[in-house]
Length: 94
Image (cartoon, rainbow, N blue to C red; front, side, top):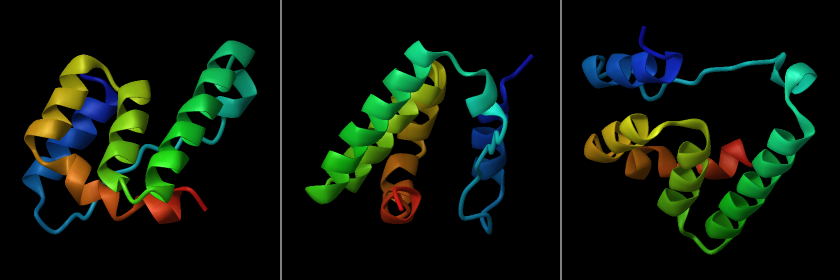
């Protein structure tokens, strides 16, 4: 069965008028382990540092590599999605 993010990548590739797809999981912080939360915090900090240096594509890639598997990251890369999503990073980090 495909994952949500794989479905989102597939959907994005078929709909030219959709600027992006986001999976929102409001309950994740209620069930996330402390170890994963610490890793997530580190990823967000690293992405923030890249964004501060103007490397928005690198910031997107850092986060994608944390939440996605190798196939999903490769699909995003092949589609040029990291560059496209880079402009959203400043808003995402607010």
